[in-house]
Image 1 (cartoon, protein in one colour):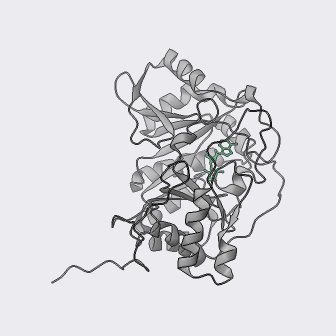
Image 2: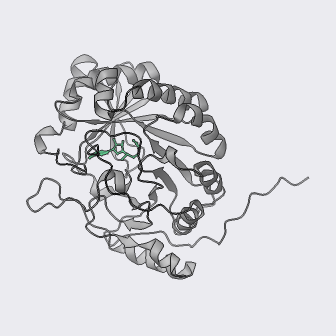
Image 3: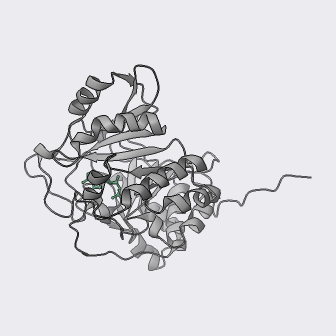
Length: 345
Ligand code: SAM
């Protein structure tokens, strides 16, 4: 008996890949499916219930993502806001898992979450077709963690979520930690141990000027160099080769080869030259750079009835205009009109 065939893609994939005018191939799409969040991390949100952007229906996200996949996107990362708050998430992942990339494979489907609801959702997410999760966790010390999230009980929920994700096979499991001087920079060494004890990849991210309030300054950023020096004093680090040219993290293991940490240094060692990413906001706007000053209303065109061919041509054109690089730290730098929680990290 012939094996059951997988559902075919809605339309045949286009042959050409998405490229920008700087010669970069764009293969990584980040999609925010809500900008609501159940945490109020001090470096991200003000703590007020500020402006909210509209959300699309789940089938609308699917149609938009399908367009990108047909143009050569191979990695889709769902984010927010907090994506686990979004009703219909499992259906979306199931449908995404049926898509095929230009080379006939299933897209690499990942998700970034604060982990608060992951304990009960990890196994269903895996069963739906999710490959990996990245959990954001900014301290290994409970009181420090909850001073940042401003949600009592959040540390134990996230720890349970991390362990459930690992048990469900949502691996390799990455933990993202944004370091801020004076808030959680004392957690660096603890995280190095956590990476080894919990068998997770901890990635430190330099704080970028994308917060709702006005916290960012060059002095508050804990740089790659400083992190490597601090960990190295406790546990000597050995650099690891990059998996691919567009990898954002510098990777290290420890002298005994057990455990991995990564450092993402968009501020002190920008990696724009190898950027392969483009973003879709929860209200269906394309952002070609985290720091874009303009957004491109893809959903508006779809709603107005544009056929897929026209939308594809418009996406190809839009991506051509991707910015060469960001200008953090330069005079005249302008923060984008939306903060990270509303763009989709
Ligand atoms: N709620 C999910 C979460 O917590 O991972 C997804 C959205 S959150 C905006 C995505 C990531 O962006 C988190 O890892 C968060 O720490 C990071 N982030 C938020 N603001 C940032 C900033 N200003 N600089 C660097 N990373 C930031």
